[in-house]
Image (cartoon, rainbow, N blue to C red; front, side, top):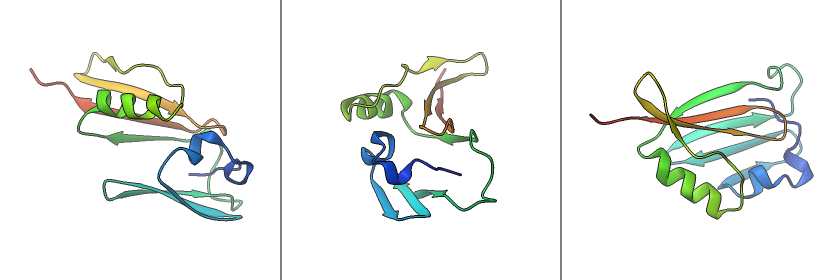
Length: 102
């Protein structure tokens, strides 16, 4: 996912478990999954999106809020999930969701 804000001390990435290799590459790793962020031209357009399935989106929301990142509370969807979206300084959207148990 393209990101031009990594070296600016962006709170969005500072407050995550992030490994940075400036100036052009970073990884964000959680629970064995890694998201690659790059400043290379040709890595894609800013304003991309990714959907990540998590075990408990509400618990993740609480954790993100506790780190001082402003994000809307997860909401139910018509397709049977609870979801929230985090938007980074470059306009990339990271949507997190989990299926709702019946």
